Image (cartoon, one colour):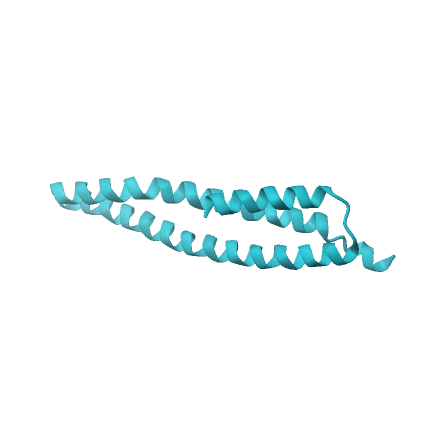
Length: 115
């Protein structure tokens, strides 16, 4: 997903810098809104997974305080190994979607309709 997001950001960056007709802008805006929807869905799913892993990590820490068992340490270690890549991936998705919002604002000038 990271590669797809970077490719789409590169594509939309190139497209937003060239001059386009109103029909081309409208088509690009529609495509951009569709892609934003896809990436928002992906971002939401990864938020749920990341929060779940963070909660499991916190519960593991509480369990370590209550029952000093080697298996609880092992669970915490495994969860932390997975949690950091999830946080990184969620951060990339969040930043990418925010950039897509900025490109949408560039392409959509609400004052164009008043002219």
